Image 1 (tube, helix red, strand yellow):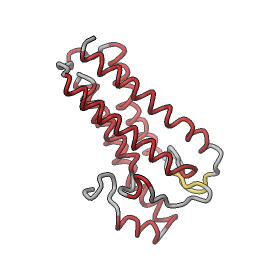
Image 2 (cartoon, helix red, strand yellow):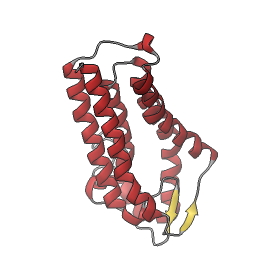
Image 3 (cartoon, helix red, strand yellow):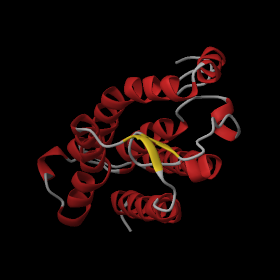
Image 4 (cartoon, one colour):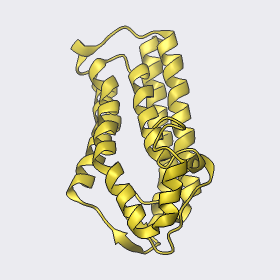
Length: 195
């Protein structure tokens, strides 16, 4: 089997695993009443960008090989590194969902009896789910030997992050006040000790 095909298969397995991780939390979240926030047009654009870059464009490439003109040679080291990065992303993604529990929401929302979560990956960064998306995009870059499909995940992540993170932090400050401000002072956004 060609190295490129191995990378593509690992990417597909990773995307399936991503959905398997998210699905039960999505179902449970529907049962908890929303008390603040909701989907805005910028939120919709950010989520659509992430979906396009992390799933639709690379999925189209894996299924069709288009755009073949942007292909580059695959290597064993690239697929191995991509696998490690993507698996790390899935682990952070799972731990983030597990710690958030009933507080989780796909959009910027505050749930009934919303609590500040500071355990697990939230002890190190305020937005580990964004960290997982960034790592998924980076893993995708190494797994898929195509410049368009490979980089689309990082672009999708960047659009989502830039459109949402400031709004999310303002919403948390409005609803959790000094508790969230103190949490902001002791943690970074997506990279422990850096940013």
